[in-house]
Length: 155
Image (cartoon, rainbow, N blue to C red; front, side, top):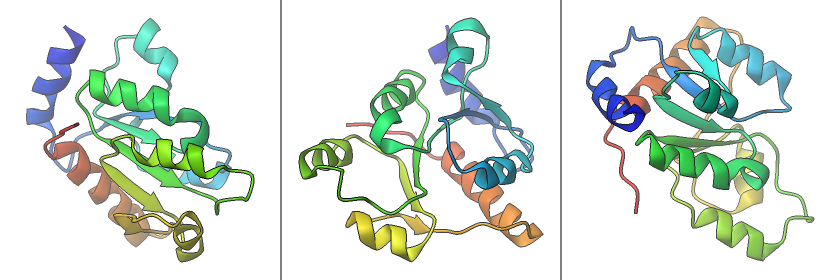
């Protein structure tokens, strides 16, 4: 029933909707607080099993440790997966792991700076920083709504 509800709920999303976002943990507390200012319902993976929340969107903040699990949730609930890279790639990440990660279907990839984008050597849909201005909040809010309202497809 949850999967069907997730698909039907997409029809009711508009720019004033409060989204339910499955939020992968992030070490970036400043970014966490920034996203909380958008006043969406942020849930963890535990809420899927113990609560009655159905995500409109999945945000992965650490693709090395979270991408596999969150991509499966994205497929199960037919909702988009956004991967946000907060840090430049380090030399400790093997090329094999990186290729496997990049082959996972992601709806949208965001790097928080050009430096981060260049270090990973992959195509990002957007390079988008954030700050406490209303313009920045509006840009992120519109982006999250646009992605959540779009047609979700996985291969």
